[in-house]
Length: 484
Ligand code: SF4
Image (cartoon, rainbow, N blue to C red; front, side, top):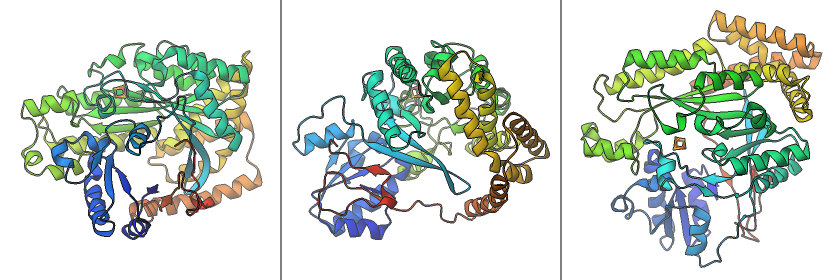
């Protein structure tokens, strides 16, 4: 398995002689898939090509010239069928996939990925994931205990590893989620879990139940106040965001720009509403039609695509990133929608400041809320927040110097004072680290602006290929799993 290969690295690998090569792609990387197919055909003409991942929402007429096989389902079962191997047994042996988290280029933590399910039953009209799996939820880990066992495996590697549960609406299945909570509470260990959840699903839990599961980070679709998706039916979003923040849950909120009911003023109103709730992270994407979704059907049937989309479909594929407007809007041009989207990101940054400090503030809320709790697991969670807060000391100085506005810099200064008042002053080593953080933050900013070293290096993994180049510590982000 190669991630991010250069042309030369791909060609070198192809020379090993493979019967099949699979390419996972999305619409926006269609042009890369196309080039890879050319390279495979040139350098390994006997190899059969399998196309997979969400790029396969495109029709067979488009894809058949590139792939000998097209996988439009959960991939392990597809590959086993293709290779004539026995079906995978459920619950499957969970692979170990670990993502490092870096701040200013320095590794500060790592997350273990738990693959609990695919697809989502909510069926929002723009959602590729949901409609790709025909609004079915495919449970990869069927019980809360299976999920907890996957967490345990990560904690054997690193007892403090954060966990990311990959499931589009993890809290929708209450029985499974509560079973997971029971396992966590029984073990008595405070976890740090990030998951995805809708307002509808999370409204059926108390904040304590959610936090007992270890959840301290959650992606919630705010979308737009008048968007009217079923998944938004539940507690008022303002109430949820405020309560979660006050208890130590960092929210990543996503908002959509370019709904038919929106104009510049309405978007500004919705943005103001979102920013007043102070999410730790915000994402703003343009309402876009992906094949297979009801919105795509609507756009097609009503002839709403901009002309070039039909004329030069490859340009449309490349623009399927959420950062381009490809549909006619009654009140706004494509350029306007794209500039409003940029403005949303800018305002978020200018008004709320960098996300690092928004998360630190949420941890401080969590620490204060739970430090004297009668609930033992939540007292442990408070200590977990305290540890994280102490580790964040060196991040304050760059924020105080380079924060986007005077007001934000002042807020970071106040936050630092509050953290030090609760948890003590930094040691000499932390002060030195803070000075070092100025250099690394300047370098990170420069590297981003000049697009230096932004392309990740090759990650290469072997699965079930004894005798072939073993995994080296450098690329051992994923350990091979005999069941895959
Ligand atoms: S809730 Fe999220 S994952 Fe589910 S259909 Fe809506 S957008 Fe997609």
